[in-house]
Length: 178
Image (cartoon, rainbow, N blue to C red; front, side, top):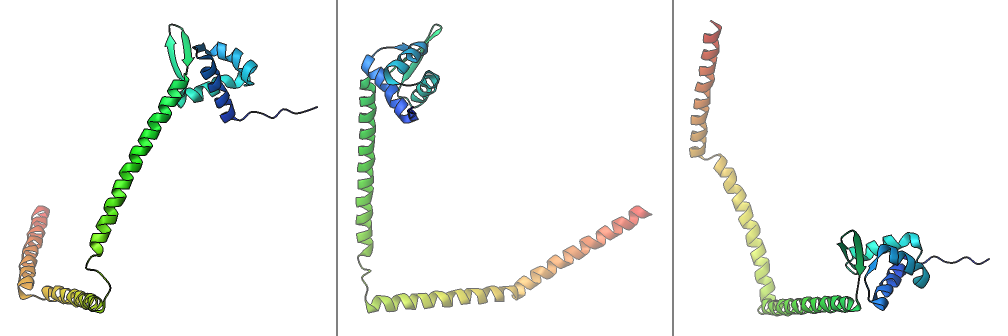
């Protein structure tokens, strides 16, 4: 007693497409459910699901005419799809190649004048030291700004306004209670 091995979904799809490419006709679902098991060994229960996956992927076309639904696919469609994908891939490749060449050129231009030498290293170290010193001075300025007489005077004026507002509210509360 030998067990038959099942056919994979991808194999079923390939076999179903072969039916369309070999016959070059229009089919209804019921026709495919008769033809597929006999000629390609696709079980009847999976014909509809395989066909739907081919339609979803755009490999098989479908249209409803009256009450009937027809399915078709011709070899030329597959060839045209492959050509279109190939042209698109070539176009993307060319675009990426152009961008790569531009990037390489930009990188080479950026490297000009940045060759490693002692003078450049010394200047970079000096620049880093100056940036650190600048950051420290900015912090000191911010600290001094907090103790600036003008800022303190402004805070005192604001404090006086707040004090008057608090007194006004207190007076209002007492006048409402009376």
